[in-house]
Image (cartoon, rainbow, N blue to C red; front, side, top):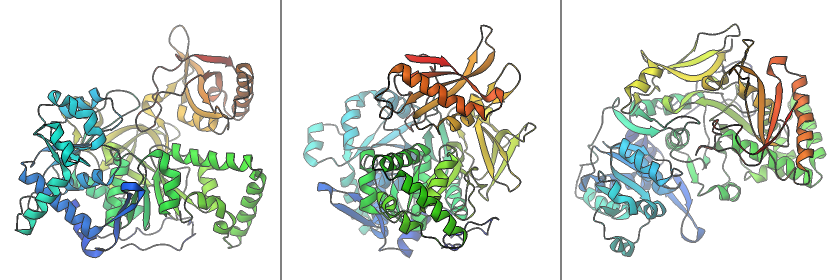
Length: 586
């Protein structure tokens, strides 16, 4: 399906786009996979007793058609259909079944409190709801508060458990699949012929931003198809992926689940975060999609393990030797760093990283050991992919080149070419659901104003400098992007989490910078509070030495607890400075 450059090549100039087979709908994409690779395993996951279950593409296509037909026979047609539950095969089956018919899919964040889940169900106008058994146990007691729901479709419910519920709105997903399969054999086409227009609403995604109230992002099938088709022209995947990130997030739902189908790859389902290390060794993926926090955690664990076993100096020396050999065309990375590769299963080629910029030293390290770290930029309102680095044209200081269907602009650039990033093209959302005011604030004449600041280099690659809402404007007129300073501070090994924000005087003017941080408890367990504070003052002073005066940290605060986070593990930049902290001037 795609042409590839030679493995190990890192080109100085961009190269032709990958060839990707066109398709016009998610149903067509799924049928192509089932026809071209019917016996290829689409999904692997642990079943009863931990045994690995495999589902081929032909079997998955048949399950989608059966479930969709069973839903249609139960009157679930042209509705908004929600899904809530842990990552599992049933979640993917519900997702593709909904996308391939005439219903609208509403993925719901499983980490939301019950009250907020009910609010999303109400606001999204859901009339049917898929649930895994564990979430059925949590939500069904509140069924009276969701009167608009006509059917609760539960995965993993036994027949006896269904009888005990005594709720005629509840149906087992397995029964719908059986009913639908039987109907298909006698020619029922109530689901197979059901369609929505490609520019009509197909998926309604509720964002979980670091500030503010979640909004329902309206995405059409054309948006989703464009993200997959044009995204694969920029960056490819290989044969086997480990699926880790929450399925309700568009990055995972589109860039991993949908892309893997069009690539005819095998996606292995990671059941929970505790199982990541085990599943890397079990499934031996050659690619994985993560957010920077995961990559940083891997990086720190590798080095802490090396330090604990006295191998850190040896690892550093081996990296230098490997680098010299690569300069003369000899690549021994997989041999030299075999023990590190075994941590990832031994076959990992590529980590795709999205959600936030990555620190350059992470990309440098993974490249040094023979694993390519690709950074991209996306936002839910853009389905979500906007740009990505390429497999052999990779500059990890940037978030890569825009998709071929996308035009990126910089609104009101300053003297450094930095301004608000704008996006237009086939991936831009339809708007916010039932919220024309919020839509008008960010979407003007088809141009989406992202709220992110950045600049475009002469080579056409995009660099993110910060969030518009986080921008600090000091009293002296200097602009500071806190994310930039946080990136420098994260190089201090003792810091686990850090947020930079403005210090204000009595008039409310932003006069300087404060760094509030949560330290690694293991590395600082033998230190007193005073010793921790003195250590961090010295470490931050070293960082300050190389920064212009207006970017220097004037004060530090050491937190007793971690920062509050969103469900996508991003720090909420609210209520800062209110935690019980020790502080000192730098």
